[in-house]
Image 1 (cartoon, rainbow, N blue to C red):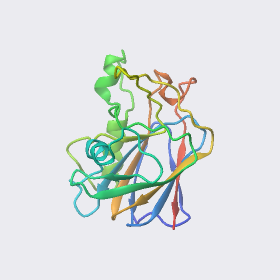
Image 2: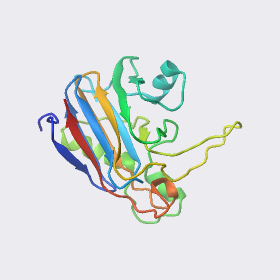
Image 3: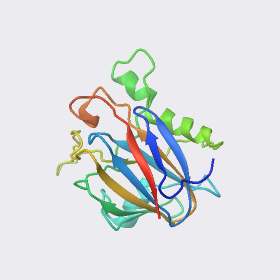
Image 4: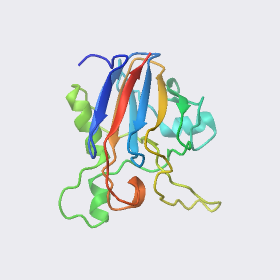
Length: 204
């Protein structure tokens, strides 16, 4: 698969993931099309997939929990990988909570298979012929998880409106992966608890 082209629009189907090759310095517009969808987001160095966007190293470098416009996220090698260059949403994103996985849904009482962000990551990478043997923490775009002075984390519906978007700039040739989070047992994806499609566009 070729790299994301300028002007190309890609659907991230509800409950599923999508991996894209992106050239360094290219911008990616991530659109919350219907307004209430969380997008777990990962990025990997295309020449060495073992180097990946790291939430713990990014928090350490930025000295903040939630990235804002102008902030650059870094890899586990402390190198820049993605910069948040534009954000029309209220700017509420999460770097703390884990990607949902099969074990989480079992804890929530699911007895049958439930789609999840961890599997979406690995399925999407496999479509590009890539494989990682671990699941890094994700940048959870649009996820609304306020925490109080005692460190207690709440889970609220996204504060976004339909059409809100962020623009990310690739700081190296990379593979970026998005998962339209399948969570439908809480209000993480809105009070309707109905995951929806989102979209990505290639910008210059």
